[in-house]
Length: 354
Image (cartoon, rainbow, N blue to C red):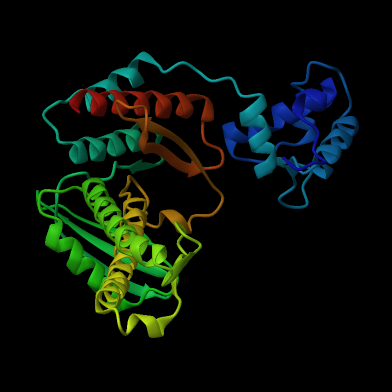
């Protein structure tokens, strides 16, 4: 709500009742509610003119709107938010709805993808809305990985898993990365990917970075101790080894060789850091899959509402979500408990399987 909109509890009794009945009438019929209709249902005996004044005040607050020149009012998006957050009383999941959800989720013969697809179909059927199901990201071993540059600020990682599944994930590449650096990162990862998940690959790269860092420290320590070099920003990403008295190195072939090896190790360290960054971005990229029950152009819808609830794995980490999308006059009191109950069962099923 905006800073100037009072919370529901701060409105007077008449304003609260008028607001509540307008929203309830709109959710039931989908039509604007007029002052004459309200005068017949209000607990207080007041004139239609008084009700119109209250509705005008609520309109000034941004809670109601008049879609045309008639005296009828309907809730705005802000008004619906206040109603859902502060007034709406949630129903319990009916025994019939509970049975349908449990039958859908309880089929242990399904794999996770098929189960979530069926959950989406069931939610659409029960709520007469479009279902939204976000599946957990895959954690099978990687068979092949590719990075594809789409623009300077957008890239795609294509993951082929050992079980044959393919996922595409969008991410924002680190600044300055080029298509050739992405190919180099993919080539390195594919050389070590066999048998490893994305998380495993990240640990492998971290070990490589640690090994390179240790080699650099060992070689540089001798140069620093002898006075040939000094560290700048040691241990930071901007660290540099500054060589002093370069002429003295010409008579010290061993130190010259160490310096060249340090330069090579630094180059390798930066590449490994870039690859580790790519992996982090790929693992956190937008890789969810969307199953839509009754609407293909989900994100081109306007004036729609989404009721969504996350589900968790055995470690209580959010790994996906289920939801319902429909017009703003959804039956929130019924649909919210259905979505929440479905998410709880899906999470329990996935936790039990893992």
